[in-house]
Amino acid sequence: MADQKFKGENEQLIDPVAEQPGFDDTESRIAILGHPIHAMSVAFPVALTFCTFAADLLYWWTGDPFWARAAMWAVGAGFLLGMFAGFSGTAELLLVSGIRARAAAWTHFIIAVTLLSLLGANWGYRLYGYETAVLPYGILLSAVCVAVVAFTGWHGGKLVFDYRLGTAKGS
Image (cartoon, rainbow, N blue to C red; front, top):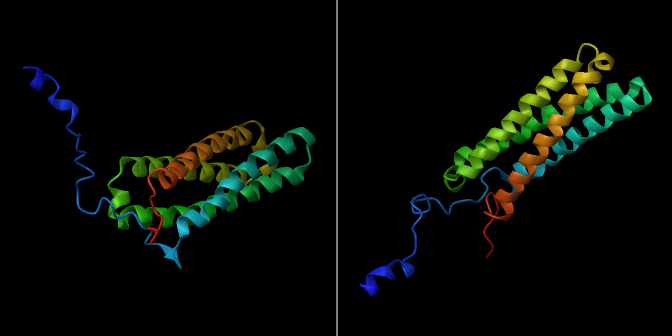
């Protein structure tokens, strides 16, 4: 009886997803000379999202229309470059079985698409009157975008550093 009680201590749990063929296939397929395009391109929309919020704050503080115009250009560039990063990330997700098999990769994808939607809405809101768009809704949209980009960036970094997704295998 005592043997049956402690039988489970030495048994290891098996993850059924990890047992699927291709689960360990996590190397980037969308790369230039081994450098993943998604990882290289996400820095621009992340930085431009923060720049948009900073320009909105400076417009609110100074009233100088330059900052409202700068925010419009920053969010537009962030959205367009984010679309490029999104296309490369989506290709990685769909083409690499080890990435596609992980729920965390899909979560990152959904958060990133949400971010792109918010950036697009923020840019579109500013296109026909960038000065009047900043207060109050433009700056609120920018603040939400900063929160979402921080969350999706943290999540994407976790995928790379903890799960080693999209990286090359060391020899």
